[in-house]
Length: 197
Image (tube, rainbow, N blue to C red):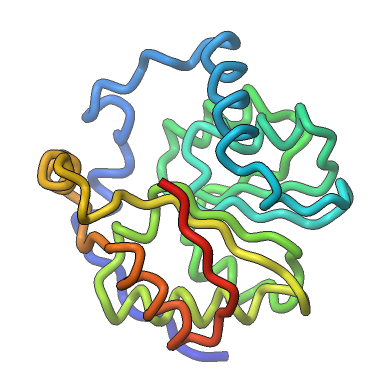
């Protein structure tokens, strides 16, 4: 078992009150979860496993909107991990069928080798420094079953709004172009990269 790289100290302080600090208390009603589910379904078309019994891990699950989507679609084995107690409380409220864990995703990955057919990370990889990200990707590969897949959503560094998004969250570390991200994924042994705007 490899040692985990230390987390930056400011993260936990910020994540403890992530919704409060960011003023993100809006959008946490059933209609908002349903609207986001429709967006996820459209944007992720053909990327989700057809087998609804596939084990799915949502890293940095936040308030659980993607887990909610999976439950609505009939997926039966879903897990979400997040550091933020405020967001975990929301995820537990709206995703009763999911396993919701408050904790460090890297520790969770390390403890669950070859377990998941799908691992997702919506707006999480930009919160890691370069060395941390390479380590995270290695842990993700170790937690995937053979033939498993990964889906990331992250701000696009070539967008004209990249600066606004980048500096809008104190915990952002790095942004990616599609080509730059594909290079890192290939370096870590991932294949068949596809990007969508």
